[in-house]
Structures are given as structure tokens and as C-alpha cells.
Amino acid sequence: MQNEFFGEPAGRESLLAASARINEALELFRRHGAPVLVVLDEEAPTRVPGDPSFEPYEGLRLEGADRRVHKQYNNSFWQTELDALLKGAEVDTVVVSGWCAEFCVLSTYRGAVERGYRARLLEGGIASDSAERLRMVEQICPRVGADTLAELLRAG
Image (cartoon, rainbow, N blue to C red; front, side, top):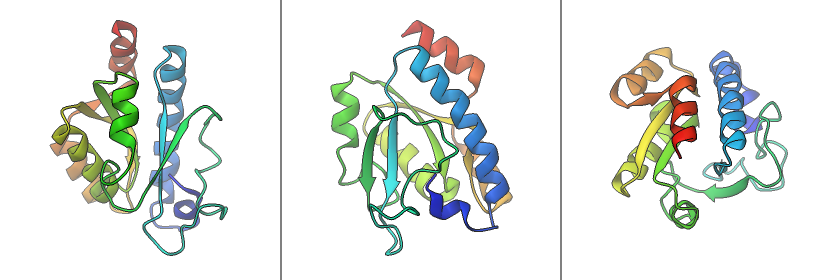
């Protein structure tokens, strides 16, 4: 959910809808003291730390305390400190959201499962420039909606 992706007309509507849902989830996570980790993709030569296009979309309600993880592969766990950060925070459930459903989101979801996390996609919180591929990813992965997410966070 980096600025670069919002500059393209393809997928923009999907990105905006997902951003709204992600902001709702961010509020729930903060209310319950759950960690928020932001993954930033350096995979393309155009995405360079420090460049405005690299930064998270300004419409997301992020805070300075949110940990940032830089990645170079679709799977946010591959060759990053994400797993260590989650284990350090004693996290056992991962809620994945973002762009692009059929690439980074699906790869990260699978990476979480492979590492033993209970993983869910944030319902309505993933985006793609292909409605067909977005639906496919939503159909093959378990999702969690706002009501269920609130219950899970309350339960600890």
C-alpha cells in the first residue's frame, strides 16, 4: 500500500476501498494494544527508500510507533526480520492486507502459514488491478471481518 501504486489508474478503486478497511482494522489493533507492522516493497527499481513513491499511502492512518519492514520479494517473510518481530511480540495470528492480492498478499499469507502462524486475510482489505484474481485469492484463503477481528483481539 505504497504511494507508487496509487498513481496508476488500474486498481486505484480497489486500493482506495482496501485502504478504508485497513484503517478500520488499524483502529481495532491499536485499541487492543496489538502490534502493527508495515511492509514496504523495494522489489522494483522505482521503489527506493526515501523517495515519496516508496512511502506508505498517506491515506493510511499509520503512526510513528508502527514497525516498518523492508522487503525485496513477494513473501514479506522471505529474508526479512518480520518473523523475528512477530515472535518477539508473541504474536500467533497474522492478519494480512494490502496490494497486490495475487502476488505479495498471497505469498505473505502462505509465508505466515509455513512459519506456523494462524493467518487470515483482512476481509475487504486486499487490493488488485484484477477483480477476478482478487476474488480468487479471497476464495482460497480464510478471511477475517471487522466483527470477528474485534472479538479475536478482545480474547487476546
